[in-house]
Amino acid sequence: MGFSYRISWWGSNLKELFYSMLRKYPFYMKATFIMLGMVILVFILSILRDILVPLSFALLLSILLNPLAGLLEKWQFPRVLAITISILLAMVLILGVTYFLFLEVRSFSSELPVFKEKFQELLIKLQHWARHDIGIATKKQNEYLNAAEDGLKPVLATAMGSVMGAIAMFFLLPVYTFLFLFYKKLILAFLYQLFEKAEEKEISVVLTQTKGAIQSYMYGLLLEAMIVATLNTCALMILGVQYAVLLGILGALLNILPFIGGILAVLFPILIATATKDGFQTQLWIMVAYIIIQFIDNHFLVPYIVASKVKINALVSIVVVLLGGSLWGISGMFLSIPFIGVLKIIFDRLPELKPWGMLIGMEVPTKRRFKSR
Image 1 (spheres, rainbow, N blue to C red):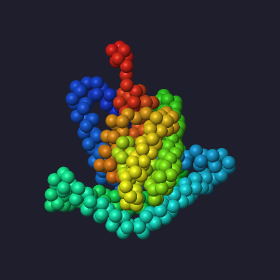
Image 2 (tube, one colour; image 1 turned 90 degrees about the vertical axis):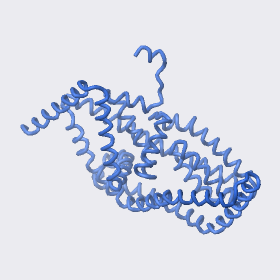
Image 3 (cartoon, one colour; image 1 turned 90 degrees about the horizontal axis):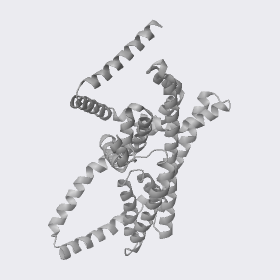
Image 4 (cartoon, helix red, strand yellow; image 1 turned 30 degrees about the horizontal axis):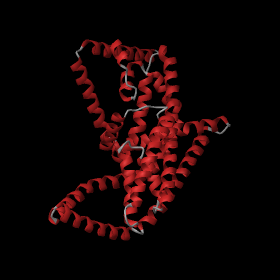
């Protein structure tokens, strides 16, 4: 008891000393201190990338599976068995989707020589048009193409690294997820110990609300992705585009990335249609279909399924996706949106961090409110 009391006493005094330093020193010193902490944090995240990326995906998966594991425990399943069944069901679902996509990709790869020949013909026509109508010499065009090829090599290397990392992560993911679920109570007890006894009730409310909001937000993202994938696939099937299912699911995954993902999602079907169909009518209809789907997604799915849980403004979304890609590659781009949503939830529920939650969110203060403040 004496040791725990001394730890609590030292923690309280250090926290009071920290707040007194923030009140005492001017803003530029506070900003320098915060920036230094952010630099150290980014450096640590970059160095420990191979460890933290699987842990991050496992944390999100454990949050999603926690209700199912809890339900099985209520049905008198032993805790270890309940967690194991939950993870097995999730892995079977992931393996099923992965195997289906693998079959689609294998079928697509068998026709790569045909696509390559078609694209070479289109490239020759494009070079001829650029030389005669625009006046760009063939030598200059080749220089542009070589520069573009050199620029794509690092991107392809990063993508291959992400694929290899995904294969390694697939074996670590169930292990980490199991441990997160098994030691859930230990992690919660640790969080309670970080704060004083008087704040325990408030912390319990914050954790409960945050857990519920995170689960709702993640379920909302999954539901939105499934609906968008279905709409993409149906539109491409109606237009007669090959590999409609593969392109529809790929477009739904890319749609998680704000703005950038929407452009990439429509680019791949247009390329496939260009290689397999004559003329440009199908490409135009693909653009029209994806514009309609984006309208439905932005004005109906996101506001009522995803943004009803967490509202993140466009500026923060784009910056966070780019920062996540720079830090952790493709994995970072996909993890950035859920994690900024989690941070928004936590910020909104902690009085000291509410200004940061407001900065991330979409609510713009009115003039009357701004003047009163």
